[in-house]
Length: 130
Length: 130
DNA sequence: CTTGATGCAAAGGATTTGCACAAAT
DNA sequence: ATTTGTGCAAATCCTTTGCATCAAG
Image 1 (cartoon, rainbow over the protein chains, first blue to last red):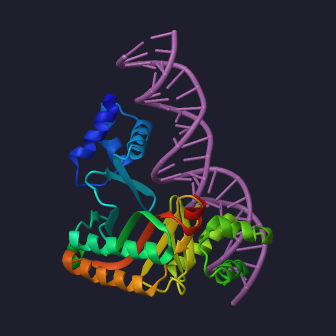
Image 2: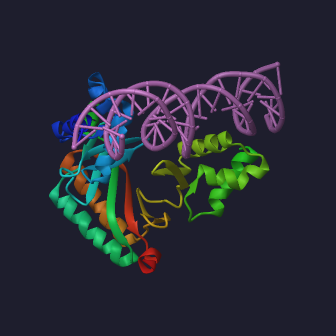
Image 3: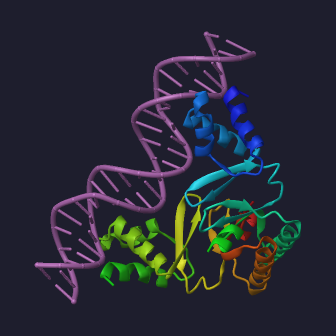
């Protein structure tokens, strides 16, 4: 655990609710003399250690602490207008999704290890603005 | 409609059930003297015309005819072992997902226009091999 | 010392773009 | 002729790597 890795991890802990990209981390920490490659290498290390969970939107990878993305389902919503990404984190809905997973495993005789669900649409703010 | 565009579209019609990448199209057609940029430009045109639907897996875009991906839900499964990508196309399951969509719209006061669901796991073949 | 981690710059893969040329109206 | 589409090569974006250097045991 080097000081750079600590700083990077600290960013995730500080922004528990956010989805951080490598670029955002880099911009926050570059004044402390942290290079892009260190950001990527550290993030990949944390992903391998299963401390972080990665998910891609368009061409960019975002990361969040796995302990806060504690479910076997990752449900994200991206607003087509303001580009905000938010979690859908609703016990009732997660339960329903988990039930469907079981059904899919049975029906298709496959083993599901991970599910990423990506919604595209308009967030509450942008619906009202429009 | 140029001859190149016809050829590219024909590939999608020929492979109705498959998810084609730009590279695969290019490799199939390059002998006919079609360049990479033409493949990309044509595919993007078709996506804008909503003839094709795009979805990304890792760093690669795959495309399929929208008329065959006829639902407002796109459910794909990628085997972690053999890397095969398959559709989950089961009326019962799609219905359940659509119901959840309505619930999510209500609970979060958002508007959902599109949903991509990506499963990762082991396909039937690879389960048996392992 | 020896090992591992860093920073820079250069390389990598997928996709896009600039530009001169070809096709089609 | 004028517009539109093509092919090539160069450029772009995000990410990874090579390599010399730095820090720590």
